Every structure is written in structure tokens, then in C-alpha cells.
Image (cartoon, rainbow, N blue to C red; front, top):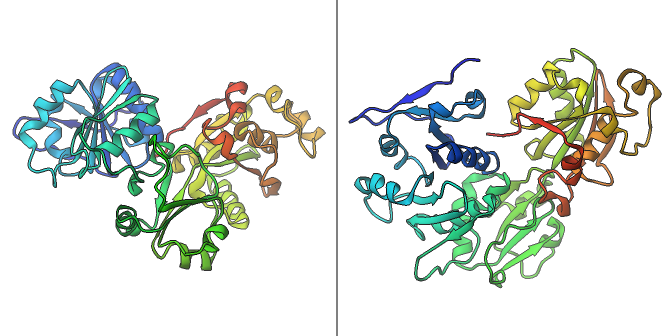
Length: 405
């Protein structure tokens, strides 16, 4: 196992860091690292930093940056580079370390501190202007912790467009629209939230949605609304049509929830290129986005299949395997005696997709292309908040490469 590159922290030097996200997560203790890794796995657009003595061996693959030396020396590099810092260190220590770096509430990043047990998430700095209050709520929801917000007037109580669904791992397209759509939300224009798939629990305030924000379960419903929305947040795994794009995304942001489970069967030695091509071709036929794939699911006989491992590592997808006995607990439309003879299961791709997703019906039951068989499931809204459905937990599936970057 090769060692990951490390950041050597030196007095008087601003270290070089690799910035790929909008938020940085920092941890320095064993328990803090556990929390940080868990948060990074679901919190999209975040970079993770922790001390090299806690190295696991998967840091390079997950884009995690290790450091040696005092964490205090890391903050001069992080402060100007990120919108917000999520720090799993004691509050007093954080205040002492960031104090020399503070400039102005209009410039400073939002600072959020988490205790070592992950029980409280505290908004520390730039609550309103830096977005720390909304960041605190999102992080607390991701960890199941209690948000602590102490500003006297937390008046916004609306949607933070750049944080929307982040704790679920949603990613956005049309990022250039984040600023104008955020302005529309803040200015209380007519906002459509179109959610065709994905986790439902994105509203974190105790008060109802503001009257200017209206939810729709389909793009068609939003397009038929009168008066028409002035901005839109569209959550879907589906590729939008030209008219939908023109009308909803002119001042809108498209979010991709992780809701697609791919059941895959393949012949031994099938190349990563062939597997990836079949996946891309199939999703294109279904008009589904590759960015909404959450997991590749298969039989445990394929847990070391090089082509499959290469594909999931490239895309940061979960890789889930089931035993033949687990697969046989699921009814399939066309059980195969031939497949049973060689694997002990009457099907692979179809039952694997059903087990992981918890879906009663599949978007694609089964398709064979060359050396690859593929099934596609959409994780239902009701099951989406279970992060893979009860079937995954009940089956005791093994996951590797489960953390996208």
C-alpha cells in the first residue's frame, strides 16, 4: 500500500493545498476523523484534511489530504480558499487559531465547529453573510446532530441555493446560475422547486416554506403554473428536454440526486471500457443522467472483478455485492437455470438492483449487451432517505469505493 502525499506544515509558510470543493472539513482526532470521513461521503463539493497518523490507505482515491505538523498552520491556506470551514476541533482552540486571520464579515468564510462526538454543530463565524448558519443546519442534518445558532436574528429562513441537498450528495449542473437564482430566492421572487426524485427532507426550518416558494413533483406541473416561476431549482435524475431546459433553466439550477442503482452482471475479464460504454449507452437510452448513479450492484463472485472495480473507482460510486442466497430472495421476471448453474443465483443484475434500491419495479428490467448485463432501478422517494433502502441493510451487503469525490 503506497503512502498518500502529505502536506508538511512549517512555521512562516502558507502550505500548498489542492482545492476542488467549496467547503473544507478539518479533523485532528481519531473520533473526529471518523466523523469527517462520514461527512465527506455524503456532503458534496467538500475537501477533507486530517492528520497523517490516521491514514487509512484510501486517502488518495478519495481525494483526502493528509498533513503533518500543527493544524494551526493549515488555516492560512484554507481561510481565503473556501466559502466555509467545517472544523472538528474544540471551540476554544478554533477561536485561538483563526483569530489572527479574521478580516471582515464580508470576506471571512463561514466557520462551523463540531464537537468530537458529533452531537453539536456550532455556527461560529459569518453566520449570515458567510452562510455559516445554513451550513450548520445542513451539516447537523447530515450527521444527525443538533445545530447551535446564536445570532439574535436568524431572518433568512429560506433555501441556500448552493447548499441545497448537499448533505444528500446532490450535485449541481448549470453552476453559473447559482448567483442569479440565489438573488431571486433572497428577493422573494416566485421560486419553483421541482423534485422528480431524491430525498424529500431538504427543508430544515420549523416554519413552513415561504409563500413565494412552491414545490412541484414534475417539470410539466411547474411549466403549467400561473403565474410562471421566476426561478427554479430542479431536482431530477432525468435528462431535461429542450423546452424544459429553455424555460426552467434560463434562471434555474439543475441538481442531480444520487438515486440510480445499476445491477451489473458480466463475463470474467470484461474490460472497464466495455462496462462503462454499456452503462453510458443504457442511461442515454433511458434519458437518465450518469451523475445520478449511486451504486453498482452485483453478485459477490464479482467482488474482485477488475473492470467493475475500475469503473466504480473512476466515478466514485458505491460497489455493492450480494451472495447468491440473498439474490434468490428477490423475485425476477426471467429466472435463468444457466445463470444458476454457474453462480447459484437465478439472476444477478435484476435482483441486485432491486435489493439495493428497495424499488418494486425497475426502470430497466434487464438488457444484455456484449459481455455485460445491466438492470436499472430508481431509488423511490420514500426509500431515498434510507440511503439505499432497507433491502441493502437487511441483505448485509458489502460496499467498497462508496465515497464519491
